[in-house]
Image 1 (cartoon, rainbow, N blue to C red):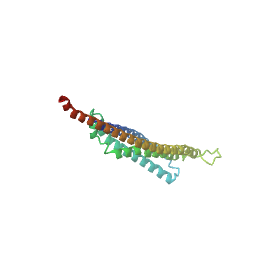
Image 2 (image 1 turned 90 degrees about the horizontal axis):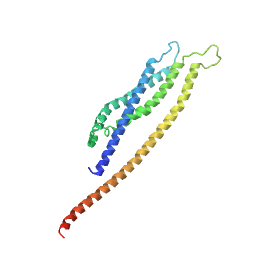
Image 3 (image 1 turned 120 degrees about the vertical axis):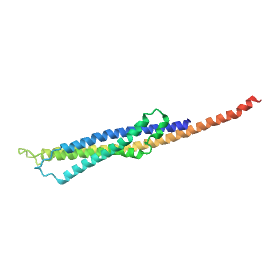
Image 4 (image 1 turned 60 degrees about the vertical axis):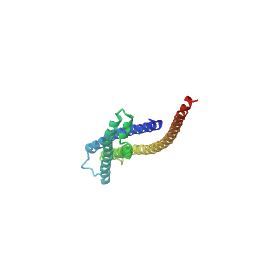
Length: 223
């Protein structure tokens, strides 16, 4: 195997391991967060005597449903693709990387990872805020207290005021992370292209030296 082919094989194996790591992270995160969302939906106790705002109940139901659907989609993609990648990665043969579907299913892997880590996490933050409102809103104010805002509403407002800055920080971090990741991948692509060109030039030099030595060897026997 030439140096150029060896470098291409090493690059394919690195992409395979990265795809496997993303699928594993997506499957674990999606299973955990979707389970929490289902437990929150089932275990929440609604007060039948309290007139909940219809918009609050609709938002809570929609957010929970979309959250579970997004994470189940990421989990389905991970469950379907990950066994095929694991089967190839466990084979100790450098040429077996061609049998892995990670190159062809690259968009699906990236989509599952984005659904699980970005969209799913944002929906989970919104789910926590809505759950606090549904849980604490029916709490009635104390008769001895002169406050116009009940303790339940105050608790819901407090949770919202804490979660909104965290959500903004999460969005800023996600944008910065993806921009840095894209920049890093671009730089790595240029470096790999330069390395491949250097290896190709070195391989050509070695081939030319081999051909020149073969052409010069008969003249040494016949002075």
